[in-house]
Length: 109
Image 1 (cartoon, helix red, strand yellow):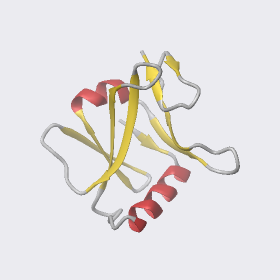
Image 2 (tube, one colour; image 1 turned 90 degrees about the horizontal axis):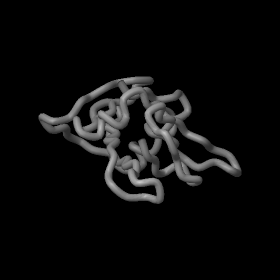
Image 3 (tube, rainbow, N blue to C red; image 1 turned 90 degrees about the vertical axis):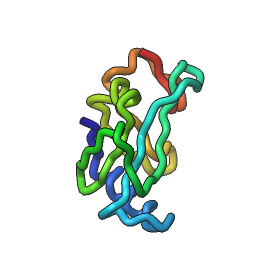
Image 4 (tube, one colour; image 1 turned 30 degrees about the horizontal axis):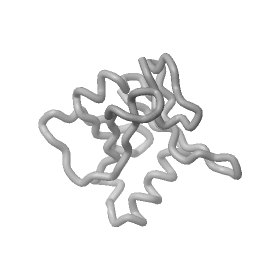
Protein backbone atom coordinates (compact mmCIF):
# COMPACT_ATOMS: atom_id res chain seq x y z
CA UNK A 1 0.00 0.00 0.00
CA UNK A 2 1.02 3.59 -0.58
CA UNK A 3 -0.08 6.08 2.06
CA UNK A 4 -0.79 9.80 1.76
CA UNK A 5 -0.20 12.25 4.60
CA UNK A 6 -2.92 14.76 5.41
CA UNK A 7 -0.80 17.68 4.16
CA UNK A 8 -0.08 15.86 0.86
CA UNK A 9 -3.77 14.99 0.43
CA UNK A 10 -4.85 18.62 0.93
CA UNK A 11 -2.26 19.94 -1.51
CA UNK A 12 -2.90 17.20 -4.08
CA UNK A 13 -6.66 17.84 -4.09
CA UNK A 14 -6.09 21.55 -4.55
CA UNK A 15 -3.62 21.03 -7.41
CA UNK A 16 -5.86 18.46 -9.08
CA UNK A 17 -8.75 20.92 -9.12
CA UNK A 18 -6.48 23.70 -10.42
CA UNK A 19 -5.41 21.39 -13.30
CA UNK A 20 -8.98 20.38 -14.21
CA UNK A 21 -8.99 16.99 -12.46
CA UNK A 22 -11.67 15.78 -10.07
CA UNK A 23 -10.16 14.48 -6.79
CA UNK A 24 -13.28 12.33 -6.25
CA UNK A 25 -12.83 10.31 -9.46
CA UNK A 26 -9.32 10.96 -10.81
CA UNK A 27 -5.97 9.62 -9.60
CA UNK A 28 -2.47 10.58 -8.64
CA UNK A 29 -0.22 8.30 -10.66
CA UNK A 30 3.08 7.49 -8.97
CA UNK A 31 5.87 5.47 -10.46
CA UNK A 32 9.57 4.78 -10.71
CA UNK A 33 11.83 5.04 -13.74
CA UNK A 34 15.55 4.74 -14.37
CA UNK A 35 17.40 8.00 -13.91
CA UNK A 36 18.31 10.60 -11.36
CA UNK A 37 21.58 10.85 -9.50
CA UNK A 38 20.91 7.73 -7.40
CA UNK A 39 19.74 5.38 -10.18
CA UNK A 40 15.94 5.42 -9.83
CA UNK A 41 13.70 8.45 -10.08
CA UNK A 42 10.18 9.05 -8.75
CA UNK A 43 7.35 10.09 -11.07
CA UNK A 44 4.16 11.83 -10.00
CA UNK A 45 1.33 13.12 -12.21
CA UNK A 46 -2.45 13.31 -12.31
CA UNK A 47 -4.43 10.84 -14.41
CA UNK A 48 -8.07 10.19 -15.29
CA UNK A 49 -7.85 6.46 -16.03
CA UNK A 50 -6.16 3.30 -14.84
CA UNK A 51 -4.89 0.29 -16.77
CA UNK A 52 -5.22 -3.43 -16.08
CA UNK A 53 -1.66 -3.51 -14.74
CA UNK A 54 -2.28 -0.79 -12.13
CA UNK A 55 -2.68 -1.28 -8.42
CA UNK A 56 -5.08 1.30 -6.99
CA UNK A 57 -5.18 2.55 -3.40
CA UNK A 58 -7.11 5.23 -1.59
CA UNK A 59 -5.80 7.01 1.47
CA UNK A 60 -6.78 10.33 3.06
CA UNK A 61 -9.43 10.77 0.36
CA UNK A 62 -6.90 10.56 -2.49
CA UNK A 63 -6.79 7.78 -5.09
CA UNK A 64 -3.32 6.52 -6.01
CA UNK A 65 -2.57 4.46 -9.14
CA UNK A 66 0.77 2.71 -9.56
CA UNK A 67 1.89 0.19 -12.18
CA UNK A 68 2.86 -3.25 -10.85
CA UNK A 69 6.56 -2.86 -11.66
CA UNK A 70 6.85 0.45 -9.79
CA UNK A 71 4.81 -0.93 -6.91
CA UNK A 72 7.64 -3.33 -6.04
CA UNK A 73 9.86 -0.30 -5.34
CA UNK A 74 7.15 1.78 -3.63
CA UNK A 75 5.37 -0.65 -1.30
CA UNK A 76 5.11 0.95 2.15
CA UNK A 77 5.90 4.45 0.85
CA UNK A 78 4.19 7.54 2.25
CA UNK A 79 3.61 10.53 0.01
CA UNK A 80 4.16 13.67 2.07
CA UNK A 81 4.12 17.39 1.37
CA UNK A 82 6.70 19.77 2.76
CA UNK A 83 5.79 23.43 2.52
CA UNK A 84 7.20 26.63 3.90
CA UNK A 85 10.30 28.61 2.99
CA UNK A 86 12.57 25.56 2.77
CA UNK A 87 9.86 23.16 1.57
CA UNK A 88 10.47 20.79 -1.30
CA UNK A 89 6.86 20.08 -2.32
CA UNK A 90 5.84 16.44 -2.58
CA UNK A 91 8.26 14.04 -0.91
CA UNK A 92 8.37 10.24 -1.07
CA UNK A 93 9.15 8.67 2.30
CA UNK A 94 10.25 5.27 0.99
CA UNK A 95 11.36 2.63 3.53
CA UNK A 96 12.79 0.51 0.67
CA UNK A 97 15.34 3.14 -0.37
CA UNK A 98 18.84 2.30 0.81
CA UNK A 99 20.20 5.63 -0.42
CA UNK A 100 18.60 8.86 -1.61
CA UNK A 101 20.04 11.91 -3.31
CA UNK A 102 20.17 15.33 -1.69
CA UNK A 103 17.09 16.59 -3.54
CA UNK A 104 15.01 13.54 -2.55
CA UNK A 105 13.81 12.92 -6.09
CA UNK A 106 15.87 9.80 -6.74
CA UNK A 107 16.94 6.73 -4.79
CA UNK A 108 18.64 3.36 -4.98
CA UNK A 109 17.93 0.02 -3.35
